[in-house]
Length: 310
Image (cartoon, rainbow, N blue to C red):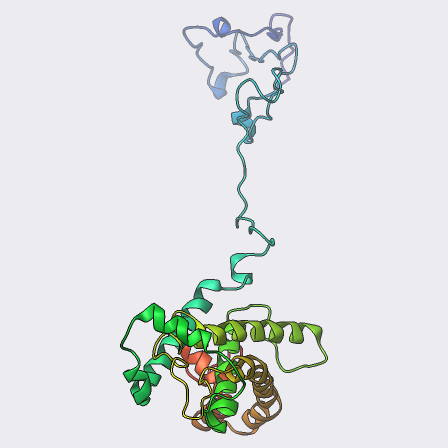
């Protein structure tokens, strides 16, 4: 079949300025494809939307992000508040020294552990010392102040084992209470050439000195509970002397550092050779008595190590 020639009547202009009224109310019938060559549509309408004269920025809701804050013509002290939402960080910034709470010294835990250690020591005193039980009677404050005033001399009459073994272990235990609550010193091993190690252990000595002073002279002390020092000894000397106040923090810190050295050079080498957990625990506990006591004060096993599971 020869192609049909188009006439001027078949060509319809495009409606550039389209509006809804250009759509006929009754749709025109569309010719079947079988007779499209003989009965073409009388009118072809191609609706074309008219573009606006000037491009307008889409609304903030359609763009998917917040509208930038408008300038406040009334100055910073007047006008409406800025509606720009504030994005909160994942973790609130730390106060004080700029460190997170978990990176700072844990005062609450350390004080609770020290209080538990102090209480257990006094319970042991009352259980084993008859003189302590007898001196609990009488005016509390008067006898306490009298005991503190009698502090003098070096020797307090206690045997060598008490003054130079028991009190250093007490100083090491109280020092380890400070260390295990200090994130900067908790994981340090014996390394006397490092400044950070000495700084950590000197902090432990200061803590031990404060604890020892409280244990000897404070409100819950040998001077207040049992009135040690109130009555003079048979030789005229006072039972409240300076030996414990000095030996406990100083020799106690040396004892603590000795335990650090034993843990690094002896206990860890033993653990590299022996896999039996019972013997590993026994060696840890008995070769580090000060650390074992401090572990017990935080309800850990005496053999506990923060980064070395048994």
